[in-house]
Structure formats: C-alpha cells, structure tokens
Length: 260
Ligand code: HXC
Image (cartoon, rainbow, N blue to C red; front, side, top):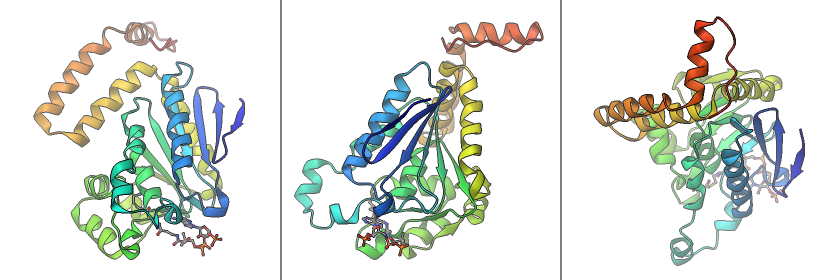
C-alpha cells in the first residue's frame, strides 16, 4: 500500500485496486497537459499490472476537476491546437481495458465532467456538480462531452447542459442516469474503493471482456454488439478462470481466480 506523489496526482494501491487522486488544489484540479499525461500514464500502468483489477480516479472534496486548464489554453492558436492534436492523447484513457471508476465530489465541470464520463462508472458524492460550461468561454466541449453526455443522458438534457451551461446536482445526475450511485460525501472514497474492490475480486480478463462488451453497446449498433458479445462470451471459455468459477459453483465454494 504505497503512495507515490507524481506532482499533479497521487498514485496508491489498495490491495487489487489502483487509486489515482488529482492533486492540484490551487487550481481546483484543472486538467493541464502535465496532469493528464501523469493520469494517463498511471492508469496505463495499472491496466498492464496483473495485480490490479480496477482503478478509482478521484479529486478533492471541493473539486473532482474544474475543467481543462483555461489558463493553459487561453492564448493557443488554431494551428497550436491542430498541430498538437489537443486532447487526442487524453482519449487513450478510454482505450484501457481495466475498469475505471470515477469518484466525484464537488465540481466536475467541462473537461472534468468529460474525464468522469471517460470512466466506466461514476459514483457521486451528494455534493457533486456536473456541468459543461464551455459555451461561456467561447468554446464547446472538446474531450468527448458532446458525444458521451448525449449517449448517457439523451438529447434533451445534453442540449440543455451544453447550450446553457446548466449544472446538474448529484440527485439530478442520478435521475438522468449520468451516475451509477450517489453517496454521502464523507463516504465517497470508501464506497468507490468498495465498488472497485468488488470488481477487482473478479477475474481480471473476464472483467475486461465484460467492459469491452458493454462499451460496444455504447459505441455500435445492436446487431454488431450482439455478435461481439457472443464472440467475447465464447472466448471466456479459453480462460482458466471460467473453469475455476464454474467448478467453484458446482463444488459450493468460493472461486480462487488467478486472472488468466
Ligand atoms: C484554470 C482554474 C480553472 C480552470 C478554476 N481555476 N478552474 N484554472 N482552469 N478550469 C482556478 C481559478 O482561476 C483560481 O485560481 C482557483 O482555481 C480557484 O478558483 P476560484 O474560481 O477562485 O474558486 P471558486 O470561486 O470557488 O469557483 C469555483 C468554480 C470556478 C465555479 C469551479 O473556478 C470556475 O468557474 N472555474 C471554471 C470552470 C469552467 O469553466 N470549466 C470549463 C473549462 S473549459 P487563482 O489563481 O485565481 O486563485 C474546458 C475546455 C473543454 O474544460 C474542452 C474539452 C476539455
């Protein structure tokens, strides 16, 4: 259970769970390039680590993240943005196969809301506030917000949030299905670690297949998705953990998954 301070984030492990905490309190965890590079690198390392089965990404009590770093972006030209392909690398987070749990307390605005939506499920503290305020800055969401928010909550709420900047509190976010659970703020981390721990107690390769299957529902149509699901289901039978899981059921004992 070690803690590594990487500058803008803290990285810890709790048994089979990786914990990444955004730690730029003076800027309400605004996501500058350095922070996102550290975050993507830490999550990528957990993805590759057979000893880690799920990752929690969290911020502070006041802010999960108050957006992309406005001060870093303010003077960029079109060519700067285009040449750097700004935000492309951040999308790498969504290509990871390990389940990602966002634990959101306080502000999740702009890129902060988009970062939460890049995770596989969101657990919100009752203090959480979700919003896409970019329109007030003369821009629009640029880290997948117009797409992932619309997929998650539908057109009516997405248009309302993106065109007016209206924020959702935790209860409304639950009602429109942006988040999976709402918990008291003082229990947020505990609950998120418990959910991630539950996921990490399963077979890692099987959890990765399940994540891939659900992600396919999000990204493609039903016919293709059902085909992918069947192939992934069949491939589960190539794992030792499928043998162990089913044998354990038959023998009325707890499975001992080896994550292979
Ligand atoms: C850079 C930020 C920041 C941001 C806050 N800060 N948000 N710096 N980028 N996104 C800095 C402030 O400048 C300030 O620094 C310090 O953090 C504390 O913030 P305050 O505003 O003083 O705090 P408070 O009054 O409590 O207000 C909190 C807030 C407000 C409502 C969250 O900070 C706010 O509106 N932030 C911007 C939210 C936003 O527009 N996000 C979208 C970003 S655009 P100093 O040095 O003054 O103390 C975006 C691009 C999308 O995400 C494209 C795709 C990613």
